[in-house]
Image 1 (spheres, rainbow, N blue to C red):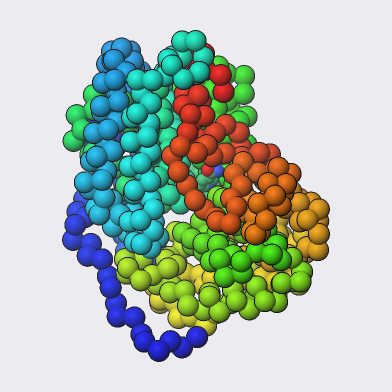
Image 2: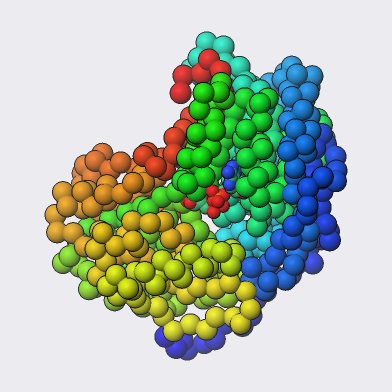
Length: 481
Ligand code: NAD
């Protein structure tokens, strides 16, 4: 679509961030050299190498777990809960103070638009610390069992799609409940976790309470399988989640798994179409579709299919794909070459199986990893693009005639993380929501997150809840879940 006015470039300056040429691990309050090989982290929008980061070996992970254990026994565990809360408040305020730095760093390392890292990832990460700071001294009084106690050392492994935010989801409730942590960020996005380590030092957090070990799957496995870890919290793919469940089975470790999804976003014929179209766009193109709860299956009532698709295509034609640091960018870079290959493969399969691919005319940068916003129509529930998580900006459109058919199709998935309902009638929304097997159901909105609200899945989307009071229960003994 040609527009009357062109946007002038509006790049956010990256000068606020200083990235060291190399980083060690953060163990026992210090940055230390790892004993494993180091690896490079790149800017997915340019393929520029940003830094070299240590891959923690088993011995390094062991050192981190020992530091966490010592802190649990000597400082953090015995500390007055109100004092723990003060540290969490301090971390939250430092995240706010350094918000621009975190936002720019996150966009550089992840490829997400600065508009999202600035307005969503970083403020929500700070909000999680504020929220759980308030819980630290109230654990005895809010029905989490008669005498809730921390579990000990939590081993936490997170993915690359919301690096700082996933860290906050993991670290804030664990610390508020009195645990210490060893956290492994994803191998393609380690930098914001390392900046967070600096924030821990700035907050004077006692040594060993938070330890950050960078690395890939082997490092993650060493964290999960370490004999002195009491609790494992994992966010990532269903496949790896399954292997972790097997590794933890038969041990005394507590486990929560936040895995993949294939959410249905259901649009009824009485929905406000313009709002629904915004919600569909937000549901699948937010964060390049690298969102576990993305509304990747649009279920639209047959009678309004053509109208919704025409309106959706017009809206997608106005989305700006490109430089993540430009404040006008809507869709940034795909996080890695591997993820881009997967998105391409599944999209090609979609076409080969008979679905109809539509993409707007859009120029993609020459370097870096890019994929245009894509809509598949004529999708049948048996198609791979209707069943598999693409984890990219790819929407599959299916139709339904009756509410029962909508529910049956929405639930026809191995996942169960989230869903959306668009309708003018509150009674219909409640009736449908009650029948959906999904951990989160949004009504007339999509992809809204709040620290007070529990988040988690059914079926192969995992088990346990993060966020809210439920999120604390997963880090306490004697707590009713
Ligand atoms: P992934 O499972 O490949 O990796 C996730 C993390 O696990 C990374 O840090 C990785 O290094 C580590 N890891 C890999 N193998 C491991 C092993 N054997 N033992 C321990 N750790 C290991 O997933 P990904 O590609 O980084 O992330 C995308 C997936 O995450 C998607 O499926 C998405 O739906 C899911 N996700 C879920 C949520 C949620 O809350 N449910 C949130 C974000 C992402």
